[in-house]
Structures are given as structure tokens and as C-alpha cells.
Length: 277
Image: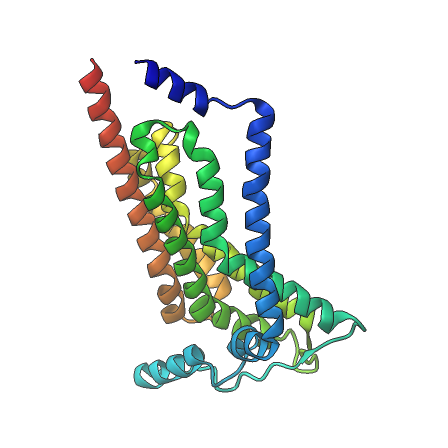
């Protein structure tokens, strides 16, 4: 009994001690991001030529695969062999600042699991014993979902978005010359947005746990979700049904996975409340 009391006293921390602990977690996260950003900065050719600018080229993997699928299905709209964006820089320091920005973003994406783990380690002591034991799994699942979203966006949504927005013309007399900052901003925003969207099952888990969302509510609104996802898919893809379905199916699958997560969480809470009564 005495040992338990001593252990509890050791665990209890003052407000300033909590701030000091948080400071070290943030510092380690910043160092990890900076180290990976420096590595990305030193590998400029690989990061830009083989990663960032690659989706704008006709020989990009996804663009070549879509052309083959288009030939097989006789759908010319999804073939992007004509893609030839003219990306220009109009600012004196534009390319250098873009290089630094992309290096930081690359470091942040690669360091995401480490940063997430650091913040989870800070939150973990405040959790109940039953919740804390799943913390390691939560970090792994969150990281996998985020990277899955990043890869899905990079290999599918980004090429489709670039093809649609980069070649769209209000008139044949108006040529598209895309600024480097505009291109980078579009690519980064799409990748980050989809990466965060793929965290939906984790968000649904916590919302279900506090009772803000139920599996019944999600099933009831499934048809509205489908309409929204189809509308989003139609906006970011070329004007053909195949591309819209290609983007919509994984997003709808993510929503169905979130329903299963909510259902599991809801049933578990119901069982715990019945056990207490």
C-alpha cells in the first residue's frame, strides 16, 4: 500500500513540471523535423525531379498506367500523355525559398510518426490504464493511415488534379504558364489534406467514445456522404465517370471503415456500462 502511494506521488507533477516535460517533447520533435529537413535539402535533385515535379510529367507512373487503362477501356480523357506543364519562377528568391519550404515539408511528413509518438507520450500518463495500453497501437495506426493518405494522394489525386487544373483553358488564346509557387502550393495542400482525411477513423473513434457520433448516425447519413464524395471527386478529376469512381471508391471505403470503428467503440462502451450496472 505504501509503495503504491509513493509511486502515485512520483507520478504527480506540478504545472511547471508538465510544461517542462512538454517542452522536451516539442524540442525532440523539432530536432527530428530539422534533421530530416536538412537531409531533404541536401538531396534537392531527388526531392524535386523525382518526387515533387514528377506528377507533372507524362512519363509519371500513374499517368502511364491511366493511359494503358484508357486504351483498354477506350476512354481517351484519362490518358495524360499530352501533359506538358510550363512551370516558371518569377521571383528572384523564389526557387531558393521553395527549396527550403519543400525541405521542411518533406521533413515534417517523414517525421510524422516520431512527432505523433512524442505528443502521445506526453498525453499517455493522463489516460486510464485500459486506454494507455493501446497507445502504441494508436500511434502506429495513425501513422499508417496518414502515409496511406499521402501515397494515395500523390499517386492518384495529385496527377489528376494537375492534369485538370494545369490544362484547363477558358480560351485557346490563353496559355497556361504555372508559377512554381502555385504548383508547389497545390501539390502540398492536396497531399496534406488527403493525409489528414485518412485520419478519419481515428477521429471517429474519439467522437464515438465521447458520444458525439454513433454508428447508426453514420449509416443513416451514408447516402449524403456518397453524394459529397462524388462531388469532390468530380471537382478534382477529369470530366469522365471512370476517374471519379477511381477516386471515390477508396474514400467511401474509408468512411465504411470509420463506421466499423464507431460500431466497435459503441458496443464496447455499452457493454462496459451494462457491466457497471
